[in-house]
Amino acid sequence: MEATWRAPWLWRALLRISRLVVPLICRLRVSGTLAPGLRRGPLILAANHVSPVDPLVLMAACSRAGIAPRFMATAGLFTTPVVGSIMRACGHLRVDRHTAQVAQALPAAAAALRDGSVVLVYPEGRIGLDPWMWPERGKTGVARMAAQSGAPVVPVAQWDTHRVLPYGAPAGLARSLLRTIRQRPVVHVRFGEPVDLSGVTGSPGAQAMRATDLIVEGIARTLAPLRADELETPRHIDRTRPPDLSRVRRNRTAGTRPG
Image 1 (spheres, rainbow, N blue to C red):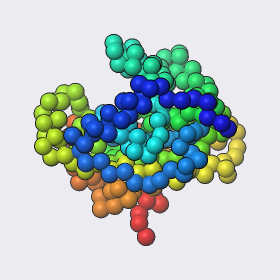
Image 2: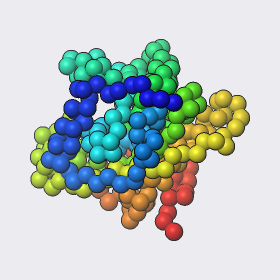
Image 3: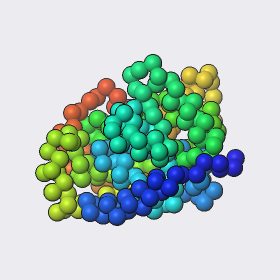
């Protein structure tokens, strides 16, 4: 499939700016590689969600990797003055969660992928609240996007962004930013291997559920090397994060342990 979508100049400029801003708040380490044939799309990047600062960190990481993904983002950002105009001008994709319009996000994303876009999405659909900070059970939208478009899915894992900005932001924002500028914690982003969905069979609903599990498992495997010495409990605890056991995956660390 030949790429026909080109990132607007504003989005390309913001990606470059992110590489100047992120070093002010953390020391970013990017690992893993994307095959050259994937960088221009169609491609789905499926990332875990740890902190409100994740989009900024992922912008810098993707800019380093030479890709300009279109983010799937909550509708609230698109209705915010100034920010909404920027989101639309940059070509990002709106998700109207908890409304009748939410179903429109899937065909819009599939169409973007057919145009050769790279689309970045958080399969969990929210900042994860797993008490051990492993990816939660995902929503099936990413799997359905892949099925409709035929685009490959690459897992992206990030770690320690919760040390930069806690879940509870913007409460205590000034204090958090002053601390992180002083400490500049190391933050990791890792691009994993494409998830093999070729063996998924069954009804469309069963396929979507199984593919979703495989995608989230791929994120967990990509995450494991970034937190190899804290597989059970994170070293840094974000006290503002309310733990939620309702979407914890069974055997959440299965297949992630080294060796």
